[in-house]
Length: 111
Length: 116
Image (cartoon, rainbow over all chains, first blue to last red; front, side):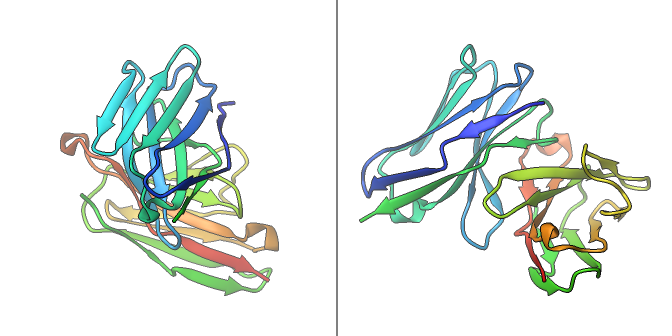
């Protein structure tokens, strides 16, 4: 079946850039997402990208997609302590439905 | 946007009992889903809650264990039946607004279930 992989932990210093990587196996993935989960909260959609795009930028967030290698990354510029959370990569064939999530990357931002 | 409220937010239950989790959306949605997030794991789709008909379950999940109701376009329940410690998880409701609104899939804050 489909699979999504992520590294489990990432630590960065405040003000540095964070890069969270994700790989997926389903070549039929149409949508790829990044969700943020803060303690005690639900999932918050940060951004998503269509599989026919290779980059999307939204303020401090940059998503890069290498469809050939099935590799997705999320770059957070000028990382702040408020960015500390678990970041989930997810994919789906239909928008908003039947997500396959990665295990999540716990981002720790050090002062 | 949509606001999804889940109740309860957390519960501690005895094994062998059942718990019903409620999911209320503040607007009519086309699709509702239930996910499970086991400790230290990612989210797994349990089922799609269909309005007016039986839910569609993913592989590994069955109706007898996770009965789901969706009586209207804004409300759904998930019951975790005959619970065991392995059912200790966070259960999340998700909803998708109609396509014309061209927006995201929303998630509730989750129900943290501990079975003792």
